[in-house]
Length: 558
Image (cartoon, rainbow, N blue to C red; front, top):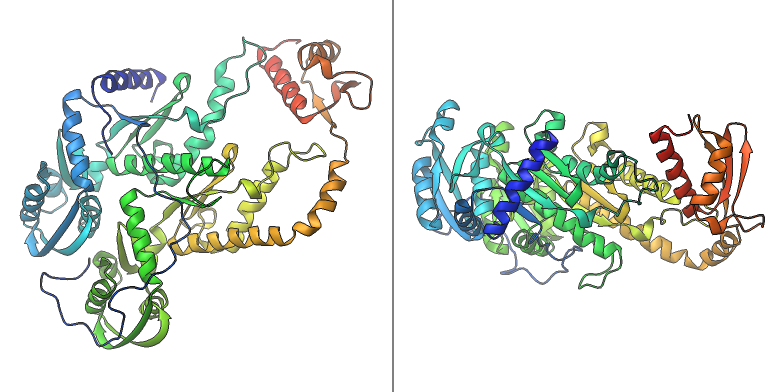
């Protein structure tokens, strides 16, 4: 997308925002309870420790739709309906009747994209069997439509159920204010240096994270339809994406903001350096509730019991929504009536499910406010994104007493440790699905991985922090030795054709003039052929490097 089009998008956004407020962003059971299988379990889950995760993130105030003013009210109503709790129980119900029921209960326009369904060989008579209670309409739609390989989008004041192919090319544009997430660029020492050479570079890390963890295959850089463009002057990103991906992006940016404050030591209700999940408030409440249930004790004794009945028993006994991923099981040649035989006592529900499902090459994941039983292959694709503050494990840039920059080295070492020890074959660099991206200015790691991998990463970081604390008694002596090192360092600069004698005078006169001199604690410049050997502090070295680069861009001294 050209910069002209991006500018037009921002103008449209401005007109829209000034006139209107911001657009807000299977349990196999029937209505009649069935007899529980033969198993002993508590009537309600006992209390369990909440998972180590920060409080829910908020997306308000940072995202603005590019839409007609007349559409804003309709889109706000649809967003509110998607957040409302929904209960459904369909048994071989035609899809058209399902949509009519949802339309009546949600009280917002919901319709079928019949043309798209016809092209996909489907119709309004496609049968739907799905039952679920106590989750948001948004999660219910995602789970139910997943089984039909369909999705939804908001178009022309209605929620439209359509195919994934159509949704991927009917994108909505939003403008995101992100200036607070990008470090302030170092002021240019020479005003004539084009801004394109510097300012846009500060946004690279953020856009790289966005394109890596928000539906990576959907962006134009890899052949998709979505795009993200920077309007640098006002620190905004114009993003064209599907409605679902916009929601994911809003939550990602909100999680980065929350984790950044945690990394900076800002006061808050959370313990220091708690990982921040990219989840909405509803999703996080459901996540914690299901996590607590999984830690409750379980006594299971099943003999050739259908998986469907066991899933229902778990849901009713532990009061959590449980869904069987029928589509994934069908692809694996299995069904919800697959018989299960297991007998376990004295273990948690998590452990019992793990042992029971492993025998079937299945597993369970927390997704869309439910505990989903699915295949191992599908679970590997069901990634969750968490933002990890790691400031306490990373040295500040240029902070080493010997003048070396430990920041990048520490980042590389930490990432390498995680990738090498936590499910090594699951990362994208070796053909897996997991991704890890640094946001070094804020000392964060953004990681998209499976639920089990996140649990292991959290454990690894906690163990590293405990090991560091245990080594605290040996650190002061080493720190004292390092603090005695000279604060200045020598660096050799290639001048690439610049006149070194003139450059020496320019540097000493333009960059921290008061720091140069003949003393051992003062900066100095030595000519070394066509190079400059400079003794200075890391801060002054950064300014010297910037000045030389700007002179090279301008072609001065040639």
